[in-house]
Image 1 (cartoon, helix red, strand yellow):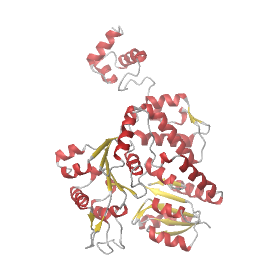
Image 2 (cartoon, rainbow, N blue to C red):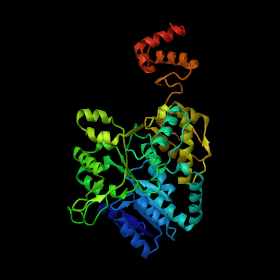
Image 3 (cartoon, one colour):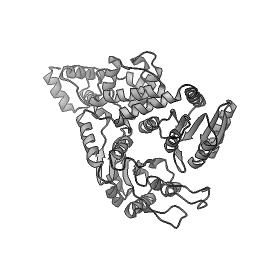
Image 4 (cartoon, helix red, strand yellow):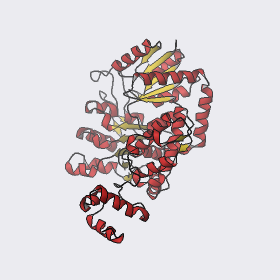
Length: 449
């Protein structure tokens, strides 16, 4: 029987998962933190390590690195509630066999575990050697960052290179899914701190009651449920970079605590009388208008200015269409590695649909679309039949486009809009996302009376 080490600090969830795996003939032992997991790994050789990404004394990627650095080629699968492109790429680049997003269904868990165990029974060394070689060949993808060719991407890359070597706090803004964490990781990797920890924290996922413990750690017995000492994010990031995603979600009380820690560069774990000196670089990100939050009194102005020593806005995918194919190829290559597939590209129809689609979910949506399409594709080319319906429903001439793409199809777009609006010019102008006056001028220009 195959033996699995489950590393998960949620006692109820770990027990439920343990019982489920036991019913499917696996021997399961549970550890609730990294320290204990490493002790168990020293005593016994497991067939698989199944670990949560967020653990009380660090993260699953830190555990993954230590396992990969040991003499035992034990496959590692990560569980995460933060299923973002950058997290997946980071885990895979560090040697994880796969990752699985919570909440997950039972069949998905069994499939991932089965694949990981088959890999171990096969040629794990070749798999690791391949991963290491790919890492050497393409260090630029360590963070999942792709240099674009569009003007907005060139400005973004210029700003990253400019601020990375300087120990300034950086505020990254942009819509959800634009890759703000990837930008933050890239700044870290280009900085003098690149060999030190990069700790990413989702501020929106931290309950206010335990925020102090999450940031600054706690001592055993300091409150109910504090069964052992815990290292906080600030101490974990000591010497490196602390990245706070969705920083606008912090409560006012947490903002005060964060401001004090940044001013004094000292933290005090909950229940401790001893201060700990920390040396961190802070990078924050938000998809909110923090200045507006300051005006409303929801965000402290002094904290805003401390976070915003240098600001970078990450452009939307629809504003960097020249880069779309670069990103599509990047995500396809990563997905091929993750799914052990060999899809080589996209059909012309798919590329046309990609270019016409508005991508409201930005890079995250593009990544998810490509991962799903690659999984469903049985040939070497991704075709229209494996795309989700929201993409294929978009008309080729895209009446709702924010702008006319070429002079040749302006007239066609206007006629289509007028027909769809029943010749109601006000409604047609709305469909075209232009003013009524502009529509009249265009109709006159093309003699559409």
